[in-house]
Length: 334
Image (tube, rainbow, N blue to C red; front, side):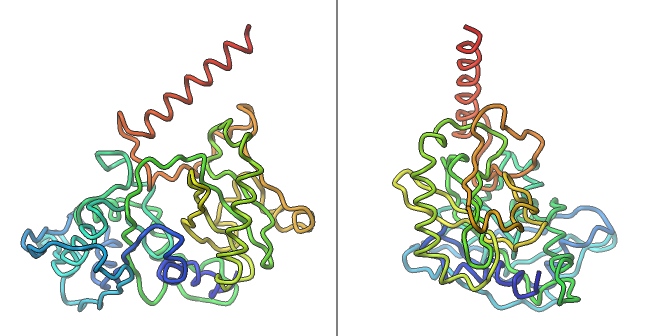
């Protein structure tokens, strides 16, 4: 894997190209002082002091806002990482910008750094997801996440042509919160040498009969999206991308990932993806029975989009799925 292949998968690189085919997002550059605060684990866990007056009293019209804005990086002297002798850090300018962007995006977002979102810290959120409504909530998720250390310190470890430990700058992407998404409608697509050789159900920990019924239609829609929207616009030979298929058949791209083993192959293996067989005979793979479920694979469900709290759409979906499984079990026994 090359350095350029990693860089092109950063959200600030691909979002301007695909913003008409993805979730509305506002991107801010992060000051180095904030990055050091995220990395600092030498003292007590302090959340930044909140500036209650940071958000001006004005109404934002989302139609008037630019959705791709890289804010100027604040001076490193704006704040210092906390220590037992220092007061909690404060980032008033960054807080103001982020809170304004949250308002523009409808009041709820989920955060993402250059490549990754803090999925592993969703447990700390009251709603069990990455849904955030304020700078403080975002900071809590980022500071609690171990998975973001990859973005911050190890992004280029698999590159054969780079000794970099981190990119020149970090950004935070605020992605508009999308409720009521169905996990079975998200797919990972594998492109090798500019050919779409594989499509995988992304939520491989569940069996969804609707996928069997709609498989051919879904494959046609995804392949058309790749041909029309992605193939000539994403400037890399081999990569993966995640899509969501809406009820009306429209396809939205959620993310791009490098072609390497740090990207989960889901229903495939990397040995298969590197073989010539799929180059000759591409496949669309889904969990086609309850026996095909992979309960041990930690991936897939787009938790960063879904509210998993009691009474939420996802909670109801799981109850319905359990009832369907019980029905099938009773039928099989009869």
